[in-house]
Image (cartoon, rainbow, N blue to C red):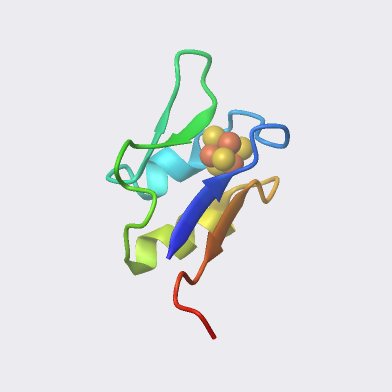
Length: 66
Ligand code: SF4
């Protein structure tokens, strides 16, 4: 998986960091960021966090080529 956050879209709601604190955190301004080194983490909570984001700023893509 590859996890990305569209920082132009993120409103700093913090849902991602609540749902999956191992992978997401919030920067000093409150915007969601992926923790360093966790961009390719796996787990159901990551997709759950993407769903929880109220503005759909989180993209989770399968890194495996089709
Ligand atoms: S849940 Fe979405 S809007 Fe909220 S901090 Fe995370 S990426 Fe940003």
